[in-house]
Length: 377
Ligand SMILES: *Cc1c(COP(=O)(O)O)cnc(C)c1O
Image (cartoon, rainbow, N blue to C red):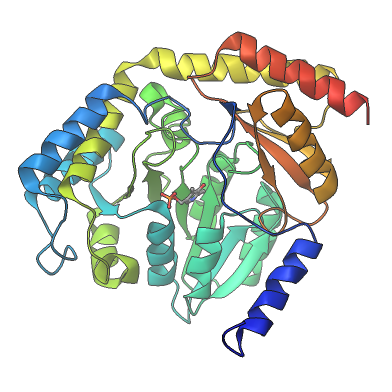
């Protein structure tokens, strides 16, 4: 050991290992059910080619943050196009969903603000809160009744932000957005919806859950991330010109970070074009997912309230989840073992992400192997 402080760090890692919570990097083997390439666009030729052409034409870098030299015309043209697609007044591209949530939540939540958020919200929303000065109210997962109780506690005059996801990343269930929109209206709160796992999958042409429920006028701000169903990278927030202007002035992760390259922005738009056009991708992923859920729930397996392409297989302990992952790997399937603190203690699980790239017979075989394994426990 070289430095004195390393003993301290090594013992923290050893403690994680003892609890079975040590993370390490690995490459998926076999058929991959862990990634988020739901529509199979990550290797789509047309999208890759449009990005490659743009890289050659405009260069690999953006040269600066959007406010200091990095604002290539491609950004503004694409934001206009994306806003038109979503039907909002304005849009703002962020480098990724994580940095968008840091910037959005911290920008709107100063020390006077009240932030209401679902207990299962993604780490990026939690971290946005950590950067903010606001007062946090966590409400029970997908519970408008619990949200209303929390809203009643805050001063009627105060600024209130409700932050939720449309489809939850570890549970695959769908948020009651209509009820949230009604509560936001009743209590004068701003409603923010992160569509990371619903965009490209739900709604007309994959335009997301807000569009599916016709809530465009009632949801004030929404987020699309391009690293999931769209198979590329980056993120875009949608809302009124007022809210977007506010973010340009206050979102630290937007202001203080070099913009992504114009080529990446070109890929974002192309991915939406391909996704909108290729309805068969969405239809396929939704059908295969529904068949898979039907099969395993009929066999008594708990997949929580999943209604989407994300299917959690609840196993409880880390050890049980890990063993199940290993069994499936022997059978040729790569799955994600999700452990605390990513999910609440005692709810370790395998997360099965279905994609349009999967063949029906492979998903059927996965269901059969899972049923066999869990019934033999
Ligand atoms: C993945 C994810 C993000 C982060 O998006 P990236 O573009 O991958 O940084 C944000 N919110 C939710 C709900 C996510 O699942």
